Each structure stands twice: as structure tokens, then as C-alpha cells.
Amino acid sequence: MNVEELVSALTLEEKAGLCSGADFWHTKAVERLGIPAIKVSDGPHGLRTQKEGSTDPNDAIEAVCFPAGCAAAASFDPALTRRMGAALGREARASGVQVLLGPAVNIKRSPLCGRNFEYYSEDPYLAGELAAGFIQGVQSEGVGTSIKHFAANSQEYRRMSASSDMTERTLREIYLPAFETAVKKSQPWTVMCSYNRVNDVFASENRMLLTDILRTEWNFKGFVMSDWGAVADRVKGVAAGLDLEMPGSGGVNDAKIVAAVKAGTLSEAALNKAVIRILNIVFRAADEAATPAPELDLKGDHTIAAELAKECAVLLQNRGVLPLKKGSKVVYIGGFAKTPRYQGGGSSHINTIRVDSALEMAESHGRRVSYVEGFPADLDQREEEEFLRAVSAAAEADAAVIFAGLPESFESEGFDRSHMRLPESQNNLIARVAAVQKNTVVVLHTGSPVECPWANDVNAVLCMYLGGEGVGAAADALLWGDANPSGRLPETWPLRLEDT
Image (cartoon, rainbow, N blue to C red):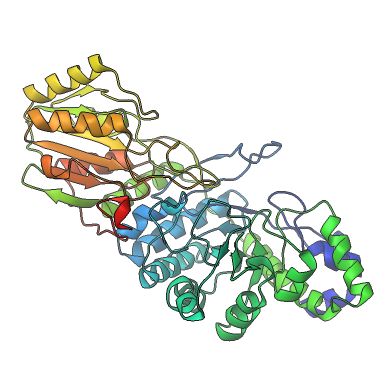
């Protein structure tokens, strides 16, 4: 039985039911007709799959955390995102996942957006090429992707209700091209619509976006799903081209679809189209899942993650101290040296198998490195005695490397930053160390630009962005000259927030 025949054999209630999730991560099955369920999972830079039997969506299996979008974009290399995607595709296949929810390609309109760490760039061309590579990599392993969040989702503040208002020219020149490039070059299996409104129409019921542009103009062949909880009016959504609601509504919205068809306010033909699009991907996924899955190789993928992180670092400044001289006496300062921030917070948070720290890697390679915490990795906390220890150690060393960055409490999905500053404790200590040590290096772990008021006082600044679980191995190789920092900034770094 082909898909069209299957749809004619479904009851109205079954068709409506197929347009919403069975639970948080699965579509619905119709056993009497042999229609299977498929499993979807976060995320753009690592697999966040709920453990079997767990009732907590955040209780995830162990997986490898690759460089986040902010870091991957600094490589300017679609071959890198393709390689990352292929590794993620293999992990997804080995873990029974049919669709990976990514990549995230929204444009970085402001450096304050809390989810910028997950997005690639402010440049539509760069974002589109990297997304196309990522999708090709994942789907080469028989796993689908869901490019997100369509469209113009560039803030977290009031993201469920805010309206991104703009002219059509702005929409088409800045906010849509990354999606267009990815769809035309790579045909993702699915597209995820965003929470926000676009010109006061919810993305989940925006016919111009979901049908006129995506399908008619770009010839998208897959289905459109909602972001989790992004549905406002389910019936309007079906009519506009939103096929699958995730997660399910416990049957509430299914009943509204059935009632609308019976009342004649929603055509059954529109519902049939949605079901056909969903089933085409469901059976494609089932066919791929029927072939033998690769073995899960987390150790091998960790090595890949560390290799990729080396390609994603940006040397923002170097007045001669880097690379550090082998055998020189160096002090590492800052909690991030021991506990690096390597991923963003929210729906893309990965339960990693291990995390390399720069301090651990330096010790394993026999570097002449000592360590002073100076400031903790997770708090803006200043203790004068610890500061004095750091300044004293820096003055006695040949060079000081300060590992700084934004704690997760400063940037995460769900809220926007209110400023561009590092924690004040970090800025203060960097200034004090630089005053006694001319060979001061600052290594930044951040998902988005930060103000660097001490830039003229330090010798070098190396931006690791959020480099994934191999970030420590990468930082070690880059600081000591075993690898060359070849990344470029994929976004503007304003000197001050007032300049934006």
C-alpha cells in the first residue's frame, strides 16, 4: 500500500492524531495499518536523547558534545560541519534516533540573544553554507535533520509572543537566506517552525512562510514540525502548512482538527497533505532504520570533537607571546582552566562522557604549568586573598594564561543577556595580572561577544567560543604551538554594547 492509499484507509481521527506527537520525542504509530512511530532528539552539537524508561526529558544518555554553532561557524568550513554532522548521524543511528533536531541557523541580530551560542552567524551566506554541510553530514548516515527555527527567531525574551517586524526585503535578504540555501542544497527531512510571530502572524500559522516560500518557491519536500509548545491555533496551523505538532497535546488539538473538518472550516484535503508529508518521512526513516546501525564509538567521536575544536578557535590578538615557549614557566589562572565552559545551556545541553581541561592536558604533556583558581568558573565571585595569590604567581612566571568566560548563568536558552560584560571579578583580575606580567594571555570560553576593556593591556587573546568536550585538548595544542589557530570571527565583536 502506498502512502496515498494509506491515507485513504485512515479514519479522520487517525489522520488528526498523526499530526501530533505521541509523547515528548515520538510520533504516533497506527499499528493496524503498519505505520510505525519515529523518534526525534535534540540537538545541533550533540545527541540529547532521553534514557529509556526515564520520565524526565532532561535525563539523557551519554553522548559526545561537539563544538557549538558559535564555534563551528568560526571555522568558515562546510566540510567541518559535514564531518560533525556525520558523526552525530552515526551516534543517532546507534541510539535509535531517526531525526536530529538541528542545525539552528537563526541570524544573530544582537550579541545579547541568549541562544546565540547555538546559531552560526550574523551573515546569511556563511550560515547557509555551514547548515547545508551539517545537514548533508547527518543525512548521509540515514538520519534526518530539522533545520530551525523558521523564521526570524533572534531573541529569547518573550520568544513565545514577540513579533519580528520587518519589510519583505529585510526578511528575504537577511533572515531567510540561510534556510533557503540549506533547503535547496541539502533538502532536510524536516523544518522546525519558531515560537515567535513574524509581522504579527505566528510562525506556526504563517502560510507565507510555511507554504508560499518554503514549499512553492524553495521546493521543500519534507514536513514542518513545531518547536516544542510553539502551536497557537492548531487548525490555522494545519491550513498554513504546519504538519506535526510537538509534543502532543494529549488529544486536545487532535479533537479540534476533527471538529474543524466536520464543520467545514478546515478542508480534509489540507489535512491529507499534512499526513502524506509526515508519512513520506516516517517510512523513509523506517527504511533507513531497518539497515544495520553502526556501533556507538564515543571514544572515537571525542577525538573528532577535539580535532574540530582546534579548527574553530580565533586568535583575536597576539603581540608575540604565542605560541608559548616549550619549557617556559607558565601559570594558568581562572576556574575555566580546570572546569572549562564548553557548551550552552537549555535544550542542547549534552550529558558528556568526558571533558578535557587545558590544565589536565598541560599536565599530561609535561608542560611547566602551575595553577591558581583566581575566580570560580560558575560564579562572579571575588576573594582578595585568591586574587593576590594569582597576581603573585603571575609576576614570578614567564607568562600568565587567564582562562575567562561567561558562566552558564550569564547566557542560556530562555533569556537574553542584559549586558556584554564578563563577570566583574574576571575583568578586575585580568587587569591586575596584566599590570605585573607583560606576557599575559586571555583564553575566552564564551558563546557570544563580550566586552574586553583590558584588550590593550594584555599580550594575546584566544577565543575558544564553546568548543565542545575536547576544548581543553584544543586549547593546549593552540597555546603551545602544536596546532595553528585558523578560525575567523563569524560575527561582529562590538567594543561596547553602546556600539550596537
